[in-house]
Length: 327
Image 1 (cartoon, rainbow, N blue to C red):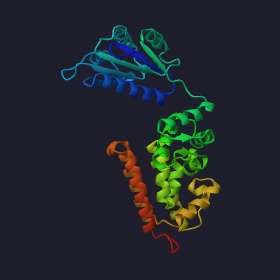
Image 2: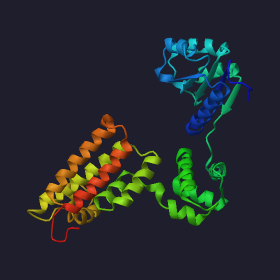
Image 3: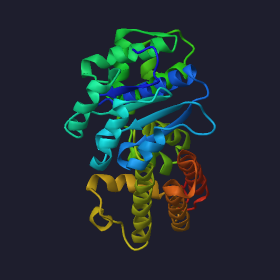
Image 4: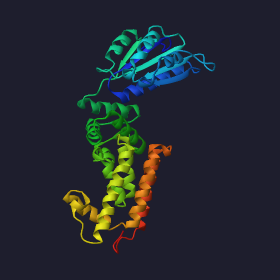
């Protein structure tokens, strides 16, 4: 790697976006350490216009140097390409230019032009499935602990093949475990079965009153990439089904076709309905609608909004008086 990041282009390539982001963050930290007074300017390829390139290529009144970080260069508009290449050909001595590009066919012509201009190129190639256990071991080692090959593979089997999710799982293990050696037993205790956690699993636990389990699954689902809106959607869907069951059951035992669910699911809905009342369901649906608005911009912390929603649903369930055997 070049001794200095200033006055040159550092190119981060490859489809492994998590590692590319982390590499870029490390380069930015390195550039800031080299010049603590440097300002940082970030931009994403799809959002760039020529004027922004000119702005990123300069310094300001408050800093003698600048770090220009451009992500997703593969999505760069063609109108900006020529100006970016001009900058890459002659990076000012007080500018550290860092660009990430996923490679592939999109933006391939630009990458072919940037590559010979880069003082250093760092490739973040996608891991093959058989390499992921080694990736886990490296993450654990970087955190100051050790893990056996069988335990590393157990974590891959439990979490899946996404490196971002695996790194998050390792971080969680390092924080929650006192043992210096991570074993299969530890992995199974923390992550067995988690790879299949989705929004419906969160909703099932939340509406069954298993608040603690629902929050644990929620956090894991969000960590592994489940969108916030899928959780509110799953909760709203389940609540509507319970509400329909309660309404129809005032006249006759509801059938699966009336509620619009598979035959096997009607028994689960009936079990859930015993713990709810129609007013409770109405309040719960309103709570979900409010949380849905919060995760779409009305609140600053969507994770907290969903956790608060699950706690609220647990309270509503406990207060519901659907039947004498309500719980």
